[in-house]
Amino acid sequence: MQADCNLVLYHIGVGPLWASNTACSRRDGHMELQPDGNAVVYVGSVERWGLRSPADARWASNTWGRNDGAHRIDVQDDGNTVMYNEANEAIWATNTAGR
Image 1 (cartoon, rainbow, N blue to C red):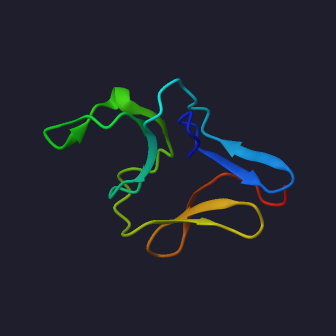
Image 2: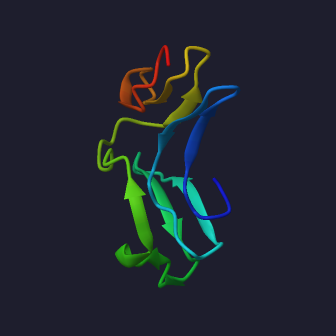
């Protein structure tokens, strides 16, 4: 996560491969891999009743509600970043392999 709230995948010596395009003037952005399987870039840290406002979300993988167990995100050697479910199935990717 860059200081400008943009989540960016870089290839050393090449430059950016993928970005969430969430750059803004604030400095409090972060990415969360939520228990429901959705990866979300948030700006701000305000929670109300244990929930975040949708207005605080700037980007999402849209993989929520899958109910397919634990999730992980791997930055692979081929340049692709992939989210896997508990069954080791790819459910989201940056599609940057080989770049």
